[in-house]
Length: 432
Image 1 (cartoon, rainbow, N blue to C red):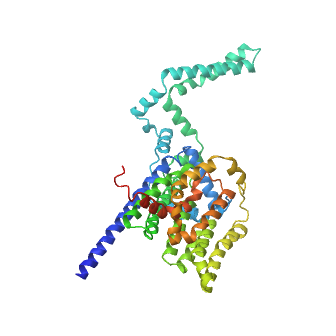
Image 2 (image 1 turned 30 degrees about the horizontal axis):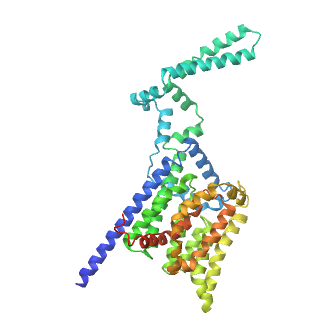
Image 3 (image 1 turned 90 degrees about the vertical axis):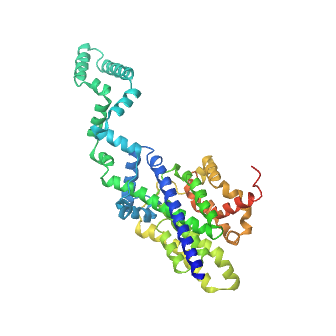
C-alpha cells in the first residue's frame, strides 16, 4: 500500500512537471513570436540594423551606459544563443528580403497583389508627376535656354526611368542589387547579423519560458498547484505590455534572477545559492541585485537584529555590498569610458510626460487593487516596503512609460494578486 502511494505520488509529480513545462514553453513561444512580429519588425530591416550595431558595440566594450554595465545578457547571446539552431519566422522582414533579392519570390500571386495596390492609373500619375518635377527643375536651372532644357530632358529620358516606375518587380530587384553589402547581409538568412537577431529571439524564448516556470514555483509558496498554473497565465496576459520599447537582452534575464532569488529566500536557500544569484544578477541589473539584498534584509535581517543574530546581519551586509562593489567595478575599472546617452536623472521628464504615469498605473493596477492583503501574508507584511524606494529610483533615473522597469514589482505581487482574486470571488459562484 505504501509503495502504491509513493508510485502515485511520483506519477502525479511527473505529470505536474510536464504540465508546467508544457505551459511555460507554449507561453514563451507565443510571447517571443509576438515580439518578433511587432517589436523587432517595427521598422523592418532598420530595427535589425540598430539592434545588431548596438549589440556589437556592447560586446566589444564600446557601448553606452547603462546597457554596457548590463553585459551578461548580451554575452550570452553572442557566445551561446546565436548558435542555437531554433529559427523564428519574421514575416515582414522575410518577405522584404525575398522581394529585394530573389526574382523567384515574385510569383503570379505577388505580382497580382502588387498590381492591385499599385494600379496602372497610379503608375501613369506618378510618371506625370515626375515629368512635371523634372520640367520645373530644368526651367529653374536653365531659364534662358530652351535648347538646354530639351537636351537634358531627352538625356534623362534615355535611361528609361519610366520602365522602373511601371515595373515594380524590376525596381525592387534593382534596389536590392544596389544595397551596400553591410545592409544586404541583414537580408541574408545565413549571415552573422541574422544569427545575432535569432540569438535575441532564442534568448527571449528561453528566459520567458524559464520565468513562467519560476513564477509557478514562486506562487506555489502561497497557492495550490492549479492556482499557481493560473498565475503563469495571469503574468503572461500582462507581459506583452512591456514590449512598447525594444526589449533589451538583460530584461527577462534579470527578472529570472530576481524571481529565483525570491524563491530562494522563501525556501530558505539564503547562503551560497542566494549569494551566487546576486552575483549573477550584477551581470544583468546591479540595481535589481541591490533590491534583492534589501528584501533579504527586510525578511531575515530585522528579525536577526531583534534577537542579535550576528551571522545573519553580517550576511545581509555582505549581500548589500556585492551590487555596490560590482557597480563601482564595472563603471570605474571594466568600462570606464562608457557614457550615458541620455540624462541620468529623468524626474522632470516623468513628471511632465503623462504616459509615464498612465502606463505604470495600468501595468500594476491589478496587484494594487489587492494591496490590502499585504498584512495577511507574512512574506508581504515583512518585505513590501522595498517597492517604494524601487519606484522612486525608477522615476528618478528611468523613463517610466517603459513599464519593463517595473517587471520585478509585477512578479513580486503575482501570488498576492491571485490570493486577492480568489478571496474576492469566493462567494460569487451564482453571481454571474
